[in-house]
Structures are given as structure tokens and as C-alpha cells.
Length: 254
Ligand code: PGA
Image (cartoon, rainbow, N blue to C red; front, side, top):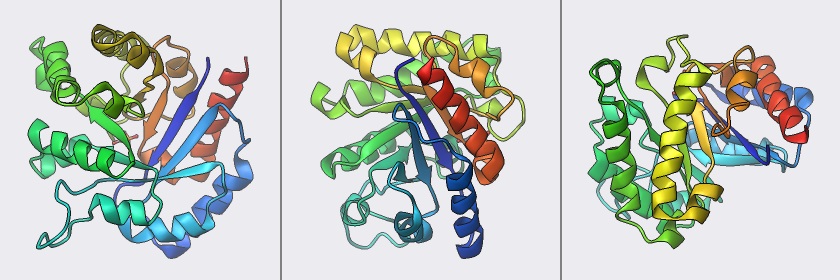
């Protein structure tokens, strides 16, 4: 396996002391690997803290970006602000944003554009609800979510794209998709990319997210089209998170 991406999505958790200790422990327990890439996404107020404390091998991501440039948008953070802080990645379209803040594919398309304009690499989240899955709509739903981005962007805009497949029924529930269920969707996503461009298909990491932990990570990462994980709950536990990162490192060295 060439490259694995391990993304920590802290969501709305942490404080100065917790973050400091979490980062120190992760640094102590992680075995740095050139082909296993760690991206840490803290809440906005702590981007600066993590940027100052993190080791050089860790990369920094934001959890969201505004679809607007600047102005009267209380509470929002623009792409230029993120770029000003040297933020390299941004999570776009997380299911919690889609569900709790009514972000539809059109808003997500605009947020994607702001990331590209500011040279911030997008981590695009997609995934179906349990209702979609039970009614056989998973693939159509996923297709529409990807198409909203692919059909609105030239290939050059997609060169740093990372996709995270996160079935909503698996997020924070402890109910991980089996490696086979996840792989089926990942292969489908790869095929959509292939229909657009073969380099895009070959170069786009497709991560899995939804109750990933140190017990299930290896089996997931061994699947052909799974190139890493977007991790919520387990990213707040230094031991667990480092274990997952180290598993990824071992696999890329095999
Ligand atoms: P989880 O969250 O690992 O706690 O399921 C994943 C995510 O929402 O990105």
C-alpha cells in the first residue's frame, strides 16, 4: 500500500490543557512514517495552539470553511483566514454539517470552491443514512454527492482531493461498516472517479470514517480501495489514535 491518511476530527471537543496533553502523548506514541500521513483537525479556536505545538510530520486541518469571502457572516471562518494561519486541509460536508446545519450539495460545492481558491486541500465527506441504505439508494445518493463537486470543477481543482466515505449510521455509534460493506462503496467511488479521469482515480485517497478504532483499523486498511480513515471518537484518545496511525505505518511498509 502506497500512502495512508489518518485524519483526526476532534469535532467540538478539547481545551488548552487537554489538547496539549493529547498532542504530547500522540507524539510520544506515534512511529513516524513517510507514507502514513497524519492530519489533525481541532476546533477553530485551537488551530493556532495546535499549529504551534505540533511536530512537523503532523498536518493541520480545519473542520469547516465559509462559502463566503468576508463580511457580515457572524460566526463564520473564511478561506483567506484559514490560509492566513497556514491551514493545509479542510473537512467539507461532514454529515454533522449536512444534517445539523442544513448544508446541501450546493453549499458544499461553494465551500469546496473557497478551499480551492485559497489553496487549502479539501477532505470531502460523503455518506448515506440508514434509510438510504435500507431502501437501496446508497449508490445513487453517493453518486449525487460526488457529482455535485466533480461536475462543477475542472480536473486541476481536484488534484488534491481527499474523499471520506462516512456512512451516517456508523458515525459515533460503535457500529462500523464491515470492511466488505465499506470496500463495496469505496470501489464504487473509485469507479466514478475513473469515469472522469484515470489519474484522478489513481491519485485520490478514499478514506473510511465511522467508529474506526485500533481493533478494526487493520482490516479496513487492507481493503483495496480504503486509503485511510477519518476518526472522531478515537482521535481524542492518544493511545488509540497512535495505535491506528502506527498500524497504517506498518501496512505501508509491508
Ligand atoms: P467517529 O466519527 O469515529 O466517532 O464515528 C467519525 C467522524 O464523524 O468523522
